[in-house]
Image (cartoon, rainbow over all chains, first blue to last red; front, side):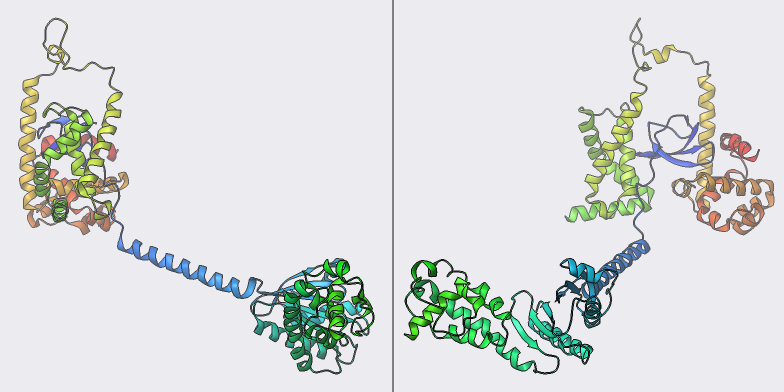
Length: 311
Length: 240
């Protein structure tokens, strides 16, 4: 293609090609009127300046995307993410995962019976109380729960207030649900710490206030005072007077819960009693040691400490 | 810093006004030469090294394509010059096997270019070139009356083939209707509506390429035989 040189500038020339285009090209010492065949054409602007509209629309889109993500995260946080859990155990053990609103977002059987209990049941999106009621109904139907049985709710909540709220709600509503049909024991405990908030209430009787006030004092005072003194004074010398009182109050009313609360907090003692304190007899003296506590040496050492103290 | 701001202002001014661009290129010739020398690894010889011309057009491209977002102007220009020189070098590599016309012949030191006869009449060619030049200058003067410069036209020229064809269709329509051209010359205004209706080209397209249309219509008025001759074949091709 031939180009006609139309105008010469020091830095470039303007050429007219045969198709009627006016183009800029490098000036290889051309002169106006000259026909050239092989010019080095100037390239178009590498890119146009970003237009205001595009910049604004880009900003708006980015902001919308941020908002959407934020909303998504909020929704996930409130509705989907498991925030707390309730472990229902009759014999079948079932874990209910709850979101912040107390709706069940996940159900899992923790043992074989639990899986069997959940077979063909979907509780997602239902309220925790509804699920608990339905699961208990199923348990009764399937023969897992019968008259005089026990239902335990172990609540894993991030804060105390929520734990109390869920505990009260579950207790009252499940009681209501079962009222007049079957009498079972309902227990509500905090999952992580294994401390008891309230316990062993028959549907017909026993306000929760009494046990629940009693319960916190058991784990807090008894083990904490007992534990530190144990290593030094274990065999011969007397322990403070608290230990006997703790089991005394706890043991008679709720035999199964006492070991649970006491056991984890007494690690340092186990080896010492049989070696050094074998001569002392912990069967006689105190009446508060049940037979199931006897074979447990952890409990035993505190027992004969007291005995010595009494002497 | 102040110097840099000043330069950026000059660059922005040069984009609007071609004389300003020429002045800026003139002022920064030492810079352009230095960048070329750095790439050639020897000082460029003016009038001999094509690289210098490439560097100058690259500088001009830098003026047209610069924006504040691209950083310092001189750095941008230097980068563009270097990349254009590399491109040019690659392009020229293809012709490496060819012998330059400037190579001295075997017998004496006369460049072989001067020994080769191309069968063309140089004196006649020179005369044609002179006539063409006169015609182009006449056109330039005429265009000034319409308030259009060749640089404007180069900026305003349709880039896409489709748009170019549309503009040419409008020009052909005007050519077939001489009264439109006369109207154009008399009023010095483009009869865009008539052209759009007559040729079926969108009015918006013609308006966008107003300067270009003015230049082409002017070429198709009177005189400008040589320029028209240069364009004629294409016009025919498109018509057929």
